[in-house]
Structure formats: C-alpha cells, structure tokens
Image (cartoon, rainbow, N blue to C red):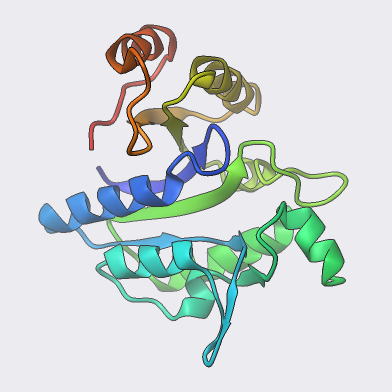
Amino acid sequence: MKGTFFVTGTDTDAGKTWACCRLLEQAQANNLSCYGLKPVAAGCDDTADGLRNDDALHLIAASSIKLPYELVNPVTLTAAIAPHIAAADEQRKLGAEQLVGYLRGTLMSHKADLILIEGAGGWRVPLNNREALSRLPQLMNLPVILVVGMKLGCINHALLTVEAIQRDGLKLHGWIANDLGNPMTRLDDNIATLEALIPAPRIIL
C-alpha cells in the first residue's frame, strides 16, 4: 500500500495507533519508506524533552523515517480528554487550517512511500465550536482508513462513520477490524456483516 492516508476510528480506543503501527511495519517489510503523524494529541506526559504522547512515540518507533517529535505531533495537550476541551483549559485555539499548515510543511519536506495521519477519537471529534477534526482530511482531500473497534455496538458506529466520511466527499480506502485483544461474542459473524455492508475492502493486518 502506497500513498498518504488519514486514519480514523469508530471511537476513542478503537485501535488507531495499533493499526497504524502494523501498517507501517508491513510497509517496512515490503521495503517501503514510511512514517506516521499525529497532528493533535490530548493526553501527554511532561518529560525532560517536553510534552510527549504515547501514541506519537509508537508511531515514531514503527516508522522507517525518524522525524523529530515536534513534526510528528505538533500540537500536544496535557489532559487526556476531548481535544477542544483540553485546548480551552490551556487557553489555546485549535483549528483545521492550523493543523493542515503543520502537516503540509512536513509532507513537502519529507517524502515517503506510505504516510499515515492518525486522527484523535472518532470522525466528528470537535476541534472548536465550528469544526471537527474531520475537516482536516477534507481540506487535504485524503483517502480514509477506518479502524473498527470490534465490540457490541460497533456495527452501528462503523456504518454511521462510513456515512459521514462519504457525506464529507472523501474516499474510504478500506477498513480494519480490531478485536481489541478480547474478541467479542460472534466476532466472525460481526466481521462478515461489516464486510457485506461497508463499501470498501477490509484490510487484513
């Protein structure tokens, strides 16, 4: 798989970072250059090197091109809560154009066969009172990979997210079923239902 993709999830903890890391590892196994980006992260630890987010650090570890942390995760927020609330608590402003500016600078200066841009939470997580994070892939016209956290209720969450992605005019490149390390009852049947209803191929990791 080659290209630049936006990776979203059915909700928080669906496994976006896990899926991104597996895709990056697969790319490396196929001798492809790759890296992952996490433009905004809420839930960062204060370290000697500055604020650091575990998801962003995992992306760096799985990437063949090792970018400086500040390029991978340009917006760091301390509290592990919705980004727009964390930003308001820190008296900071978040906006899609701001994030796109960070990303375009990195994408122009660092080419790779595969680039994954990981979102935060689900498709409609707010950035501010007017914009959701979904505005970022819209502005950049990015194909989307959806990670479905396989648990009770995931079919509804997945199909609503697919509808929202299509309504926003973006292409769903594919989707990933993540069993969350604790397979749900009738997992295979639920995956089969999603395969029949989601108009994009399932990506096997």
